[in-house]
Length: 316
Image (cartoon, rainbow, N blue to C red):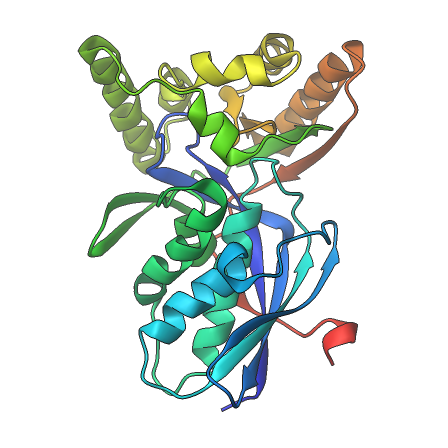
């Protein structure tokens, strides 16, 4: 077995508007690099934290990566420990699965240092335990796509039942992040404890039609279904210029536009690279009219989730 493993854990988009807390998609290019080193003593600790975010908690119980590794260690009878170093490529509080990526990267790397083989389904509960440190709850919409890749629906968590959903080849995802931080706990706190039955019925219909559209490669159906009637109305006010940015995306032909996870990043599903570029430009210009700086990406939905990678120079 190796003494050290580095994993690239991709950013992800939770909810995908239509499937709150059950649907999620991996994203391309953006992600965390997590390196786990084997220790002789059965302890878990934080090593270095570099990259876009450097002020993460270093107490093991308060760090998503070490909390996930502690859960993994508790599930084994191997008398070793782990030191985890994180190179953050995902800004925190962005709605791009930053806390989930650190947790997922840690357990995928940690599992490589153990004698037995671990599947993504085996690792899901431990990554969720880490994610819960940041979000306050066990929700798989970022953890599952980061682990499994692609677009996935988590039907159940105990035992894990993660269902891959095909994504039409022409789909491109635009992501525009305003220069704001929105902690997941704050975004979840603004949601109601109960919703009218009629709203649940309408949203269930949208989710079913969205999944059908993905299987049928029917972009028009996806466009009719990619709507959030339950969460978006409560969270939109947390993002500056939300309505104008969403309207700009839809006016340029986006199939749908809403919050990526808890926000403040907005995403839009688009048809083809050319359509995605037009939507990206319209969204960034709408934010600019409100004097909100942004950064933007265009991503396919990659089939791969977290995977081993070459170590960073500092970890070699």
